[in-house]
Image 1 (cartoon, rainbow, N blue to C red):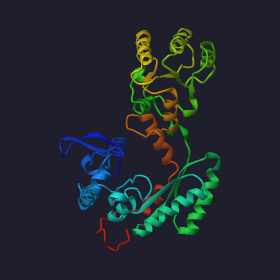
Image 2 (image 1 turned 90 degrees about the horizontal axis):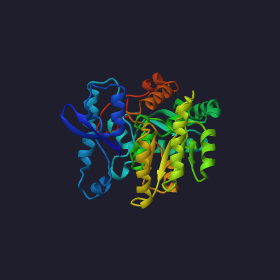
Image 3 (image 1 turned 90 degrees about the vertical axis):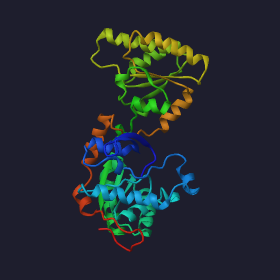
Image 4 (image 1 turned 180 degrees about the horizontal axis):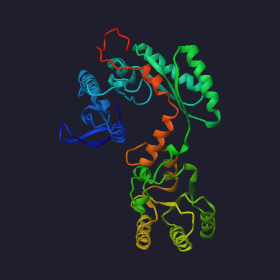
Length: 362
């Protein structure tokens, strides 16, 4: 069950349908061609869905029947069925389909995931565990995500003992944080800022850390000094009225090319201005002229102030998608090494059951 969706082609229905975005990622990444998209995303909850449900426009029973049918269909041709919830165990309660309730409906054991720490992490897990108990859902184990590398061994040791002593369940995985996985690519920033790259499209999946983002408010000479001192892969943000910064940025690209520097110049520029403002139009005209001389320079022009753009990027959490293969592969390799899949599979199973039946999942 998910909220954000993408359009894909269903072979069985021979038409375009909408599915949760993570479904498209998982099916394509792991080549799950033995199942059709139509069975992989039974319930979408887009904007307006909750109001339609309360107004009686969406049937509660049809919604749950869609989940049952999806799990049955996938089970027929699969050894393992993985059902991904969205958010904590209570998400979806307003439409009668919380994660805990869906786990109970499908007979699935639950794997709880929480971000690193000890006390606060355990407190979050307890709230979710109680809701699982309320719906008679087995908690197969816990995965702790985004653990500070310097506290990895400590967190793994203490959480293993705490889970065993308190709930008698295992720690299935302890994942050290890998900041790169949370770094937005330029393609992510295109969607966030509702703008397309004016140039440098071949670098759409180049990633930038939030710490590498620099707001340019200095003089031209100071900017050029910083440009040559800062790490190559830096994301610069300037206002559309700063013609000098725009021209200086392109000039530095040209200088690096002439020098044939061993270190590639991987900076990018975001030019900001209010929508329909004269300065934004002038900046676009200037950029169009300089881009004609060098289309390899990554530049985005967006209809926000510099403060708005900086704040949006700082608060943004990029999601994995199938087109960003570099980050998807990095995530797969990173997590695979820190989860005990044999233990996970030994403690989970799937068995469709009546929602009201008193049955403990296998």
